Amino acid sequence: MNRGCCLETLDERKEFILEKNSSDKNKIIDCEKNSIAGSISQRACVYCGARVVLNPITDAYHIVHGPIGCAVYTWDIRGSLSSREEVYRNSFSTDLREEDIIFGGEKKLAAAIDEIAAKHSPKLIFVYATCVVGVIGDDLEAVCKEAERKHNIKVVPVQSSGFAGNKKDGYKAACHALLLGPKVEKKKGINFLGDFNLAGEMWIVTSYLKQLGIEVNAKITGDSTFEEIKNAAKSELNIVQCAGSMTYLAKQMEKEYGIPFIDVSFYGIEDTVTSFEKVIEALGDKYNEEFLDLIKKEALETEKSLMTYKELLKDKKAAIYVGGGFKAISLIKQFNELGMKTVMVGTQTGKRNEYETIKSLVDEGTVILDDSNPSELEKFMKEKGADILVGGVKERPLAYKLGIAFCDHNHERKHPLNCFEGSINFAQEVHTSVNSPVWKSIRKELRDVHED
Image 1 (cartoon, rainbow, N blue to C red):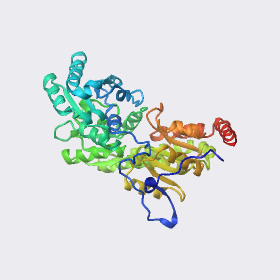
Image 2 (image 1 turned 180 degrees about the horizontal axis):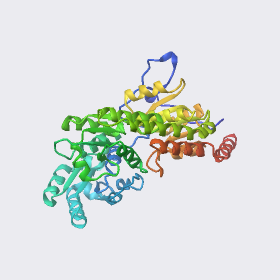
Image 3 (image 1 turned 45 degrees about the vertical axis):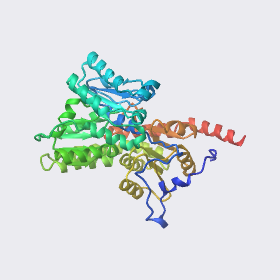
């Protein structure tokens, strides 16, 4: 099918793109570097990375120190659910103007903190630096420290100026902001790092862990609170769902508080079962085998429920473009469970070892991309004949314009995609999108346009 033409890949980008090829098994993909100027990366900025991690803390106040446009990045486009407080759905900005850029914005920031402290009696305030603050050099540390003394509350500066790196640096800045508790005596229980409770996923996993007799002391950061994060240092184990954003925090907590960590993924049947087994193993013999029997039974029942979808999705081709490598790996396995073939897979912040795992999982001819851009995604989805793209809000319009089905695996979705119930939700969504008759009409329109 001719879906139109697109631009060729930039020469500077070629080392960040790999096509699996049996005659060149040793080739490795370039990654973990800043974006190349001019390639219009899909990867978000430092401030975005920090906001992704910290925004789901339900009783925190978020002040964006910068122009009003940066404050648009709020709960409305980074949705996550709360079982208690709703404070985090608000966003505050210092609304820096031209004269503030010239003379400095520290007084305006101090006034903003004073106003929130007076009106809302907050427990915790995060203050985000934006690009322009990095340029003019406002001293966030000093302003926040003075505000803490003045109001006797926690005011945490988040060094997330956009010019200082990429989204991964924002993750790291957020992780520094989350090291709030002192070193304390350990107690039973774990911390769950890197699930943002977009559609209730945190509650699903914690309900299984509760059946296992495992207490989740701190959820970081979906549906969490300041109190939970302060007490996170007491836990005996960290489990890390989003490796891209939270591995740094897990390593820091291991170093500061002596808490070991393991990577988990509750996406797809295989990874869900494996992750529960890993948690039990990491905690020793304190928990019985009955739970393992339960989840294996649920896995078998879920596999039976997927049979209908497997028939409907047989031989369909999937393209994946997500934030981290660990999620991409789980998605490849999920498509395999559905009998689908992954023909293109990319991430914004994948690591070398994650790309090696991806390469080992996909078939020959699959294109693997690091820190891609719309032109490359378009080119390879067309070349490989993808039937569906799995991604986030930035990738949705591209898929629709190409007449390709889309599955939102990011912050705009409204139903959970994790554990066993999420595996069925995922299969349903992929089926209804891929097999919708609308794509035939759109592709016919596209053919007509290009033939004209």
